[in-house]
Image (cartoon, rainbow, N blue to C red; front, side):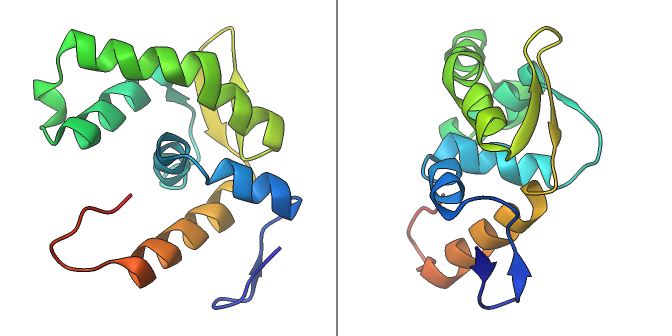
Length: 124
């Protein structure tokens, strides 16, 4: 799949790329992973995503908010991203790392989010 605006290829099947970015939590995971080359703990991702979804500082995320996100990450989203090749998830250590597809997907997410942004409305 080619990112037409930037001319960068996303090294995965187009259907897999669309599935990877079809969920807001998966988009947030991809964006977080695109900012590092290191593994990120699923618990850290859960806090970050819970803070965004609840519009609070990460230090103000409650245990219930974090747990709800963590469970969905562990049971669904991290495995999905791993099977699609959008992230490298280690189920044993609960750590996730970027792959070659992560940054091109993040670029696509940023481009679509920016192109679709309307002031005064929430975005992904």
